[in-house]
Length: 408
Image 1: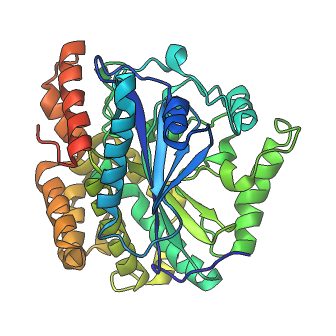
Image 2: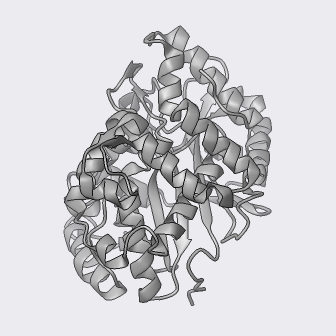
């Protein structure tokens, strides 16, 4: 039986981090050793009070998440930070630590990828056979997921419409993956650039990243889930894959738990920044759902193609992206072309006071100093040598351990 909550009643937050050697920052695929040391035996999930740990597709990435839905965002970052410190303490004997951001700057996924060989390994092996998971869009990605509940079709319609509308500019706030293969990719959100095409073998799984104009459960199955199920049949001969997991749009609808999961948010340098961004996005979604800025019918009128055009630019330049779509700007009462930073500042003026004091400080820091991707590039000073990358990302690891912001 599904435990259904109403809009914005509770939240689920998931954060992904990579394990790297302390000396040299090379990825270290020992999540199984970490879990075994913590738990005594190897398992796929560990309940650690209000936070849960779990493995991911690859053996060097661990996910920490809320252990069930929570209504308390204000104290969540402290819980995440305490779990980060505990994990780093456990990893010390292996000369290993957690590294934040949405991608490792110098990992070679073709030679360094190790798929998780334990629980669910049959599913991961199938994914690898279909898509070849030894690539940046698969084995070198870390993100934050926000899970938001809906009670019924009426609430789903409102939440889905608002979420679709906000997705294109989220990378302007949260981009943190500008460097891959020890060079600037040309994208401040390279993770999302790869995300768009990493399932090109079965295009319907990702769609156009922005979900289709679907407003109820029945139509969602008809337009999204059923075509995915048909497309995967020739590959999934043992019928082990679930359409809820196969759906890879930038926001996926989980009718198995009545929630929409937002997936376009890069992991930041510390948990407080992550949770502050989550809290800010949630308040903006509340504003959109209220129809104070734009009516529900006008929100629903947006085609995914038009929203994707905006997102395509934003994953390149993040907060510095110039938005020229007059219809989109009008949502935020902006009459002239404006960059994404201006849109987020306008939204912060409208909802910022609803955030905790600490979250306000973190959002104000990002709005003033730029996305983490911008700050990383500034700190690198166009020097992508092993030494300089090591210095900058070593500092990012310190920011994660100490739960503080990264200053270039």
